Amino acid sequence: MKRQLPESDLERAFELIATAIDRVGRDHESMFLAKLALALATQLRSVDAISAAISSAERDVQR
Amino acid sequence: MPRPAHRNSSLYFNYPHYDFVAPPELAGTGLTHHVAIVGGGPVGLTAALELARHGVSCVLLEEKDTVNEGSRAICIARHSLEIMQQLGISDRFVRKGLGWTHGTSYYGTRPVYRLEMPHSEQERFFPMYNLQQQYVEQFLVDAAAANSRIDLRWQSRLAGIEIANAGASLTVETPQGSYCLRARHVIAADGARSAVRAQLGLRLKGDAYEGCYVIADVRMRSDYPTERRAFFDSPGNPGSTVLIHRQPDDIWRIDYQLAAGESEAEALSEANVTRRVRAILAMIGEQAPWELEWWSLYKAYTLALDDYRHGPVLFVGDAAHLVPIFGVRGLNSGLADAMNAAWKLAYVIRGWAPAKLLASYSSERRGATMEVFELAAKSTQFMTPPTRGFTLMRDAALALAVHDDATRPLINPRQSQPYTYAASPLTGFPARDREFSAGPCAGAAIVNRQLGAGRFLLDALGRGFSGMYFSRNGDVPAQVRALCDDLGVGDEPFALIVIVDMATFTAYGADDGTFYLVRPDRHIVARWRQIETDEVRRALQQSLGGTER
Image (cartoon, rainbow over the protein chains, first blue to last red):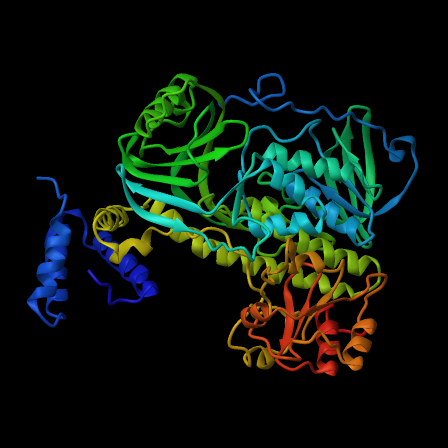
């Protein structure tokens, strides 16, 4: 994937999501992350970008 | 308990023994010294050598009778080598140290990030050298012992300090009794558990981080090149982090993070260290026999004094601040502290600058510490994630990076860089600085350039202030020569460096007539696209604390 976000914002995004995960707590983690993924998907121009991101994230995920 | 790499038990290093020599104070002779340095580690010794370079004598007190035990701070950054060059001892570091430019980070056993540190033939030194701290101290002690301006007092422990109007009185305990040492200035270089700091009732403030590392040295023959290896969640230490560095004398540093809740005391037993190291060496495919040399425990802190100056005392290195090891800023920032404190103190003592120059020590070096804290907090958050959220995100970033480079910048270990004193009261003419579109800015350290075969820009620096004048044909106007003749401070002539090399013009954003004014510690006071002689004079005054000499 080609990164659109500048490097400095990438770090900031990492921290914002990490602290939000801590805020919602472990019981609501999955729901929060699913909502976040969907909310971010609405910000993209096409479903292709979402498909590419899903493929990348799905690799090596253990079942 | 950690095995002390004691003089009798080290596999490779002969710990020297330094005798106690009775000082004149023990015979009742009352002297007042210009400077007393407390602590004979690398930072205190560097401060002593820099004072001596500017003609100032000092007494250095060290409680031990040998150098520090164990390899400790092993990564010496380029800017620290440049300090050693100024002190005239970089050759020994280069001969013994292992220079390196690269690193690899792994998630499990798969590479996810390649660290490439800036390096080119323009540099005399590698970006980083691995060298055990005992050698660093040994080289510095040898230089200090050969310097008649440094009175090195071994087996001399600080038992008390009292601040008086004109300096400080130190109570020193020795094998032959205690004595009172009087000094006008004190440099506290006595480390993380600073006795000076404790005696004066000062406290470090800041944060402690989650996560705890065992750092272990083993002796082992291996041909693996010198580079930084970081393993996240690997078979060698599942769920935690491992760092591996090569050192001289076939010594390898293995740092491994303990799991949350692991007992520190148990983790430090020889049997446990052996077991953990064996698993890590098996993971990286090392099959040669190995022996444990030394190990210790490490935790990350970002702690600092509010002010690095307390009356006549300047705090340097770990006595002033504790920083996490990730990014190798502990020793390297301590050496920069020592240089900053020492040239300023020397100039004040010799009457070349007003006492208020010393105020800039704390503002400049505390600024450096705050930047280190910010960078180190990020590195530490990644190396030892403090919460569930950060752990999950760290693992996600690493897992994505196996196949995808979009998130790889998050894995950058952010290694030590020299700090820029852009906002310092000693740095001048910001509007002139903004006229440049390239080159190191005002407040930054100057960047080396190869000016001829084996001849580098930094080799031409003077003992005190220096100036770089850019001239394509090598001509220097009489007015500029006259200015430079006039800019010497005390007995330190101004070093004029004429730059004709076109590549260096480009690197410094220079034109014919460009001028960079450089402090004794290699930092740029100010720069002009076209030299303005009156402004150069004013900038030099400003960098000496602001008043006429």
